[in-house]
Length: 400
Image (tube, rainbow, N blue to C red):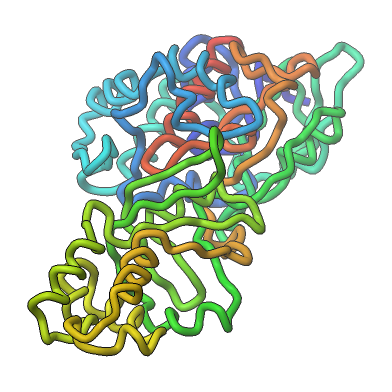
């Protein structure tokens, strides 16, 4: 039976990074993944260029960009390993990158540059990597360490790190392995649900808007009430079944079934005043007037829903114009669900952070650590989830 100082299960962002750091700190590390391909989620992220971190993350209050039962849990790791730290590593490997809006950083060439960097870090640490190799069973040995039955035999280690990610994108090998291991050792799990995911609507309710599929526009989107109110200013995308785009992906992490969304389809515009002015001077149809403020396709679809809006601006009633402006600024709608794990970018929920040390990511089960997406820490869209992967992996590796 082979022995190692640590076995890391999952060769994604968190697992690769943790293995490389621990190996370079002198640990004998085995990294195992059931997939033949390494870090597929990195490869497909950011349109193939990997949105690998976000410069806008505030290391003094990183929790404002994350959700979970206890968002403050992530502060320790994120303040000790910041976006600047990861950027320095990327620069050392001479990977060219660029910044898009809102602090989002991407590889210039390909996400594969990032994967190769992580593999080189593992090589520098002498990490042993078994891929593809499945773990059939994990148990605690008599000495307090762990034994793992794998496709390549049984291995032993005093420490095991679970970095198997979440449930999104099952077609690239996502599994519930980490959640099953947590349950096996009596650790609480916050119920997983898709996050950063498109929202869907009842087919009949959505029928008037289905023809807008492919249309995108900037909006302000909100959900929740009072102190739980959350809002984002981002682009919205109409789909055949509902809504997507950055605005909807962001708000999906805060949306709960049965609660409404409020969307301002013309943020910053004073539609009430504009339509009142149009009534004084314009013989154009209202749809044509609205096209100055929202996309023409949306204006046509929206005004087609009410006969009072299908007339020249000069002939429209004041109340009809007020309803039109108010509806576009405060579109209230209730999603019936999401596009599910197949389209979700990350998982909300996971191993309960109350079961873990925020310093080391070690669980109440001694020697068993959980890092990355499998933990109940979910970031905003735009590189925050990768930064959690790097930071949690770094914190864990220091403790190995």
